[in-house]
Image 1 (cartoon, rainbow, N blue to C red):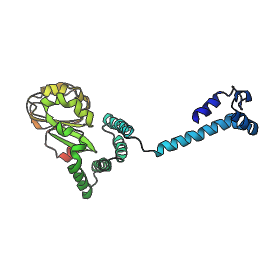
Image 2 (cartoon, rainbow, N blue to C red):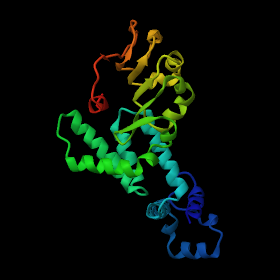
Image 3 (cartoon, helix red, strand yellow):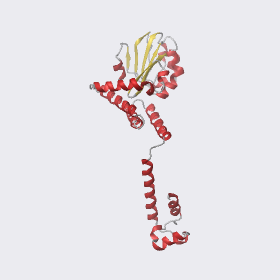
Image 4 (cartoon, rainbow, N blue to C red):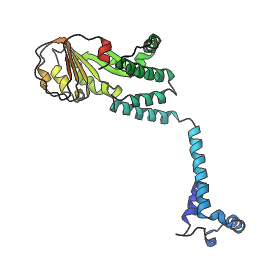
Length: 266
């Protein structure tokens, strides 16, 4: 019907408000023209087209999206939150979308975002909310890690997604791209830094790390290379002489051990 209306509208001469009779060839069309010529006016044709457009959009909105379309939409939303790891809004948008098929995950994301915001404001965290987060992680954590459980020895959820990973420095270059493709990593801890630290720090994904923790005994000379995004360097579990750091965003160098909850707020 939309195609037919558009075809009729295209036959209207420039400046004409009504379709000329010679352009109507069907018997039914001529009958309608004789009884109601304004049916073929520019205004009526446009109004009828809009009615069908509105009806089509309403029907489309009422039909549940196909699984493939829904998955593509979620992929796009996930890409947005990966691209903006500091912004909670893409996380909450993703939580709303995933709730249609995984309500527990949607609830978990929203809850962790809210609890971190409360903690950053210095507000108390309700015990029942902490218990609910822990219960969700116990039951679904491996699945929600997007495969990180098989890539790193240790990881932590923050703000609804894995933000912290811990692995040996020598393993980082081979796994870094995959790690950053499945989670909005903000905090990285490299262990056993006596082997492979220089190669790890040279990997391009290091330019996306905001909190870098090093653990182990080994030379820290590799830190002379500029890391554009690091705000906090945690050396509380590392030993070695610290060279001058030409890092433009560096705000803190931690030498004393901090609690996991403190580091999670950085």
